[in-house]
Structures are given as C-alpha cells and as structure tokens.
Amino acid sequence: MGNVFNLKRSMNSDHQRNVAILVDVQNVYYTCREAYQRHFDYNQFWYVATQAVNVSTARAYAISSKDAKQRQFHHILRGIGFEVILKPYIQRSDGSTKGDWDVGIALDAIELAADVDEVILVSGDGDFCLLVERIQQRFKKKVTVYGVPKLTAQALVDCADTFVAIDEDFLL
Image 1 (cartoon, rainbow, N blue to C red):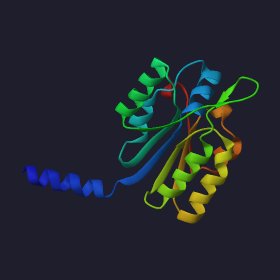
Image 2: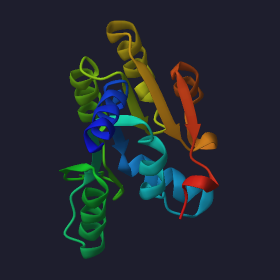
Image 3: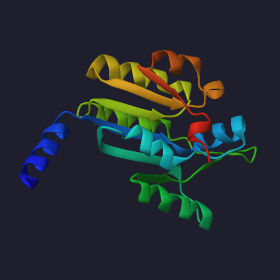
Image 4: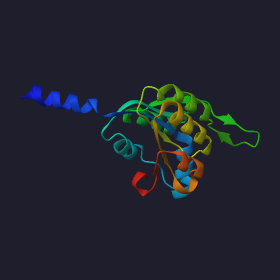
C-alpha cells in the first residue's frame, strides 16, 4: 500500500510548477518599514509562495554585515530555505547606504528563467519591469511580483502576470 501512496505522490509532484524565488531583501525591509513600521514575515511568505510548487531556487539578496542581528537574520533566511547572497553595501557621499542588488537579481533571473515555469520576484523596484517583460517575452514564463502596494512602482504591478500585495498577512 505504501508503494501506491508514493507513486501517487510522485505523479502529483510531476505536475507541480517549478519556481525560482528572488527576494530583494533591502527593498522589502525598507518598504515594509516605511508603509507599516513592521517587518516582513519571511516564514509566512514561504508558506504561501511555495504551496503546490517545486522550488528549484530561492535566493535572498542581502547586504553583508558584521552586526550580530543581521548575521542571525541571514541564518534564519537560510533555515527557511533561502540561499542568502551577500555583498557589501555602497556608502554614498551623503553618508547613506544602498544595497544595489538590481543587476545581480536581474542576471540571476535571466539565467534561471529558462529552467522554471515561474519566477517569483519580491521587490517593489520599478527598474525590474524591463526584466519582467524580458522573462515573459523571451522565455514565455509567468512572473509573480510581491510588493508593498503603495510603494511598488505601478509599472511593475502592471507588467507582472500576478501582483501579490505585501499587507497585514505578510507582516510580523
């Protein structure tokens, strides 16, 4: 009887969509903080985004830090299932800092798109609209965007196949 269950399970998994999840951690942090004064719930996001799909790749693009809390946060992301990709932050002349992962995310998305059914992008950055359109046109793949509604570029909302609002359901 166990073999029948495993066969059914195997047959069902053959029909699951393969997805790549790409998270712009800095964008998510700052937009959630500005809009809600709260943090994004990565566990809840993972639970929702990975229902009935096969996650082929899940990457969280973040800034390297010696801060213990940041390192713990990166460890938590790894525990959830993300590969955490780190790079140093950019220090501007005015003293502010920027993560600036846009090109890295875009390059990875283009490389991954051929081998998945869907790309899930978590960012509100309007610069990604061109990327979304390229994935849709060149690879004929679906792109779902998660973003904070009032801080996500309207162009990105419009070009995504599906836009999922980061709202109360995705906050700590």
